[in-house]
Length: 100
Image (cartoon, rainbow, N blue to C red; front, side):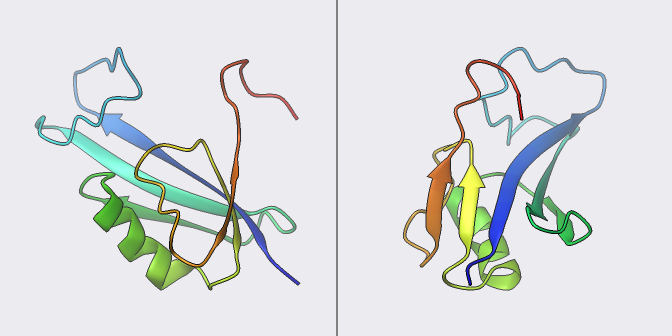
C-alpha cells in the first residue's frame, strides 16, 4: 500500500511582504523557508523542516531523509519538486483557491 503525502513549502519573512509567492527569495535577508509534509490518511503523521532555500537539491535531500520510494507525493508542481526520486507525483491545481 502506498502512502499519500501532501507536501508544500512556505516562507516566513521579517518585515517584508512577498508580492509574488512563486518567487524563491533565497537571496534576501530575513526569509526562512519551511518544507512540510502531511500523511493524508493520518494527519498526526507529519514533518516540518527548516530549509535554506527551495531549490531542487535542497528538496531532494529532505525527500531522501523523510520519504520512502513509492510514496505518492501531492504538490503544487513547483519546479523544485523532485520528479525523478522514485515517487509517484500528483499535482494540485491551486489556481482556483483551496477546496476539499
